[in-house]
Image 1: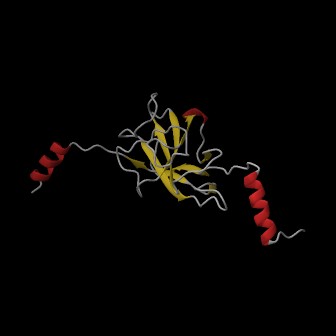
Image 2: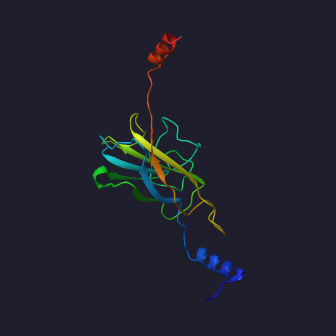
Image 3: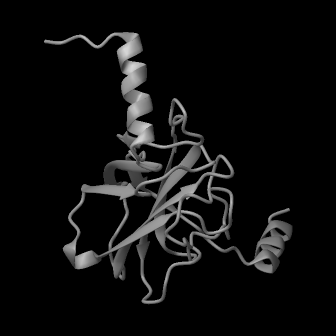
Length: 179
């Protein structure tokens, strides 16, 4: 077995960069599973999104639309998407989402999995649809390459959440009636 010394490793890295070896952009692989009580009834597709995690949690009304580019990490709609017909999916479902070759200026990323009931493109998670998220951090690319890149394994997502819209007027009446 040949050992690579630090000067040789640095020379190899510089050679790789100089000859055009580009890094793999932010990417994730893992397993999507269903939480307790989650049903597939009405779902037409499993929608997966890889997006920069601008906040620690996905907020209701936050866009999940992507432009299938990751090199503009802080731009709206930056990220990747994939869609699977629900009849072709068996849970737990192994997935991989990759930004392809390149880097991003964002180190914090999120995988979003949605059991989508619609036929239109998924731009927002509609109320009443099951979803799950998992955040992860991508490291710096290394010597001579600005930005963040690399495949992160073990980014597992459990679909166990739902956005529920509450009728504010009804909630206020119910609260007043209980006093």
